[in-house]
Image (tube, rainbow, N blue to C red):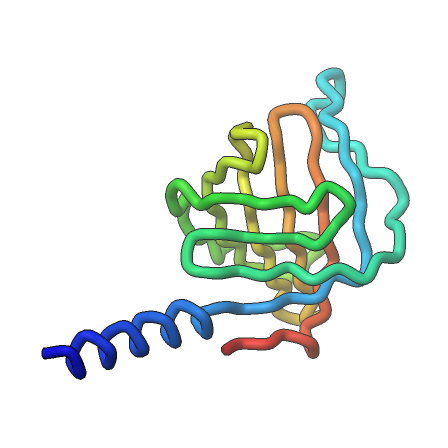
Length: 139
């Protein structure tokens, strides 16, 4: 019985420790909601070197704020979208951040250019991360 408990503990610990994905952001844009134009106004992007770690229901970004998101629910996948003629797929999740504010976390994958975007969107401001498609670590 003792060996079984040790084995189960080891399995749970290794599964939890290695069930993660790491993404690497090379650029960041800040956006404000423009209520007159009813669209997002984004600043010019800034070069960054950030790691975005995704665990089962948690997302961590090693930015100045040490952003930490908890996934509350999956909002769906949409794959029939195009931007400038390029098809893309978007997946979105409803989240809560480290200050218990509600936000939307989305991952956009453009099919032709292979560009990947991660967006964290609140009601009136947004953060858009450009993610390297050739530097994705899955454990």
